[in-house]
Amino acid sequence: MLRLVARPARPSDYDHFARLFVELGTDHPVLPRDRWESALARDTLFFEADGEVVAYAYVQPLRGVGYVRHVVVAPSHRGRGVGVQVMRAVAAHLRGRGCTRWCLNVKPDNTAAVRLYRSAGMENVYAMTTLQLAWDAAARLPRPARPVIARPAEPPDDAVLEASFGLLPGQIAEARGRGGLVLLCLVDPAAPGAAPLGLASFDPFLPGAFPFRVAAPELAAPLLDAIRPHAPRAPEALLVTVEDDDALAAALRAVGATVQLVGAHFRGEIPDPG
Image (cartoon, rainbow, N blue to C red):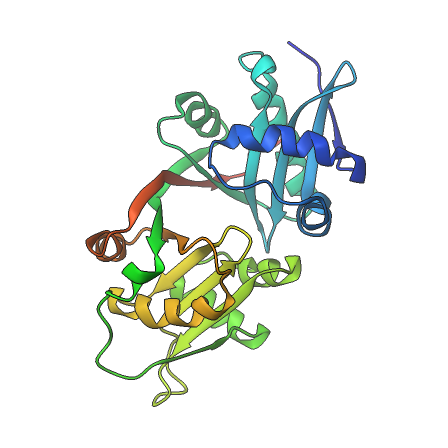
């Protein structure tokens, strides 16, 4: 088996990141160097074989759970046991950060990756769909009968937002800490003590919202209204990632949103090193 050396990212690794990132096949633009260095590099591991960078993993250690965001192996080194070694190194890294569980997203038709993640103790929990939604189409979405308002999601909101929408503990704080994202929550002004009605983490660079969670499909419209002022003038559309919510995905498709990516969310216990 090819022997890998794992190491933390260095500023000089940006070109390796940019080269390998496109292999994810998401069609997302490559982050500029400054954004990569400030937001991703601190949680990225690179893997070398004979001095050549052949893989990287970007992971987010949250509160007891590691969110494995990217696992990329260079095409020239696939099928040689690299993925297994990468996942073992990621597991050790996350255990060292106090995590006992991990999760990730994968394309269901990527059979090699699915097989790898199942072998690492993960199982499919729910489906997710990324849709491209034109802003003029968003204006045609149904709207709630009651008035709702959107406001910035602040640290005191995090625990109740994560509990209300099934997010991982620490996920919102991690997003806030990376910078460059717009975090919004949707609330009922007539019931200030009630559970929140929606949450969006919007990245103007993509532009895209993930996570994007609402208590009912008709609440998507006011949340998108709140995102719109933060969006760039072009393109006249955004990406919305819908997780485990068929009704919301159907509502977006009904006004013309197109499916860009279908994924599966996997979770499991981090295996013991033995």
